[in-house]
Image (cartoon, rainbow, N blue to C red):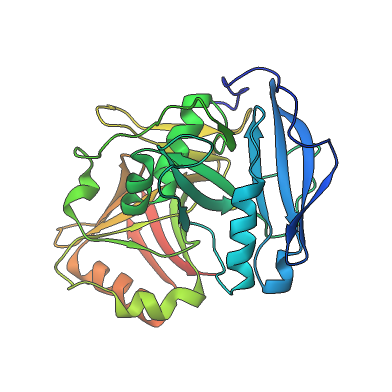
Amino acid sequence: MGRRAGTGPGPTAALPYPASMAIDLGHGVAANVYPHQLGALACTSYVTDGLGAFDHPELVMTMAGALDPTPFLRVLVDFAQQGRVVEEGQFAEVGPPGMFGREDFCGVTYQRAWPMHDVPLPDGALAMIVLVGPEMEVAKRYGPLRVLARLGSAHRFFPTAVWCDVNRAPVCAEESQTVLASVPIGRFGVSSVVARGYDVVLSMPRSEQPMIASNMPPAEIPVALTMSLAHDADSCLVWSAGQQAAEAISLPDTAGACLSGCFVLFVPGQTADECNILEDGFVCMLTDQSWQRIRTGLAAGTPVTVPCGPRTLELVWT
């Protein structure tokens, strides 16, 4: 599925602030205002400047329509000044009355900001994607990438529809049919799993290796790890209940050379090693011997390569 213009609202109404204005958010932090286009959709992005003084990544919030995110940004700046630093894949929840006058706008998830034309982005900036209704619980249990891929699919926009539209409906309901409902799930920051040709590559951050080692379930139990979008991905698997075949969203005119998955599921106790697409992720059916090699690599922070039929499963550390 190629990248196309979002199907959200048309041109924006009057902006709450003049274009190219810097808005004071307090504590020496400002928000720079950039009107721009995403496909045919008129948007306004607010990019913070000054959070680096608190060892906090700069933040980006993109709005469709005349919505003012600065009160929410001021709260986040207060948190940063208190030492509450966010990372990719984390969440900020908002209680009643919700965001922008909607009770079901229950917060945001933080994801690496992808380039946007006419919007200068600081290195390491995080985009804030508003989650609606049940999307928050689905994202917390099965990883935000599952929700963001569905949002991108709904708007035919890769890697996701980054803009906040006050009229948006949720793209998720309660999950009951997913295979992940019956297995333990771990979430580990900016880890990713991708298919490159016949290679399935699981990349794990060394900074989280101690937590990985201390949270491994018993060897006989299947376990799933939810993933973030790989930084070099040109496509991403997407799944909804009832879907019969594998689907993906992608950049336009790409061959899917780096296909990102939303999770990797390890199932031990098999008679042979296999690795295949399942829902919006990858399932690795492993012999106990191969699973022990993977477990040892996860616990010790060492690379592992396992032949899986026509594929090769690789564990690498970043």
